[in-house]
Length: 364
Image (tube, rainbow, N blue to C red):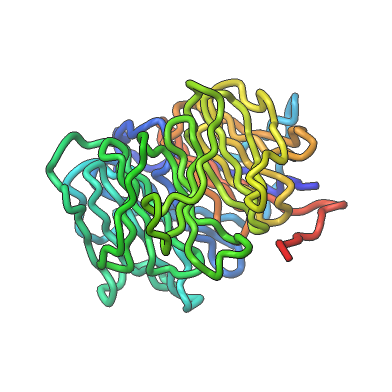
């Protein structure tokens, strides 16, 4: 069973960001990087056309719990804050993402704006931008049509590969650094995407999971038939999906307007579990636990982030923001959550495995 070790709350200095830009329904404008000894973390946030970073201490602190398993945050001060030294976007940034590279002291920060422009830069151990690898890629149809939500994710098995979704264009562009490999065309407006971490019998081919409308679609980047779409699963008619995530053992979870977390087994494409009405309002963010994949983190549009066992449909704990969510993310290898509110408050939660935590089992 998972337990909360700490929940911290820090306010972004008004001198850095006076009024955050509103963004979109999906809270994809935050990324986390925790240092090796877990003593502090850098929180990257996007507002307007620029990206900012905030340093927060994550040293051990007590956690207070109120009624109905609600965690009460501890107020702390920001240690350091600044604007990320890189070329700004030409329109509002919609999504940012971090990817670990082959070197432990280096990671990659990517961002995409409402027009689909992608900017990627390498960040070293001191969390400063490195000019050795910084590039920008614009979509082929740049300047055509309206700006809209755009999503970004990196391939965990190949950090140089990135997928960029552009909602109004109904397209997903696949890049290897600044080279466009192919473009996927969705039937409906894409709302979330992620590379699958594990999938049997695919011979190492990159697999992309995308939510579009009320459907979950799976794309094999090496397949040409049907435009690369190898699986299409429909949810409740009329209920939009807003979030998708993949677990370390290969399961896929989706959530959206129906307030239900549905977990699929990709070996048979059947629903393993449906956690009905786990959130009071629409689900706009999901992340499987890295400590125990039987648990999942759910972000609702009602300022709440909860943790629960999706197999048992049981809530363990939750915490709440004080205004609309602008960003939500979890580190790729640890259970450290970050969330950013319209009030400029940042929440950082560190979760650990308690007694009875199950051992991770992957597909044979």
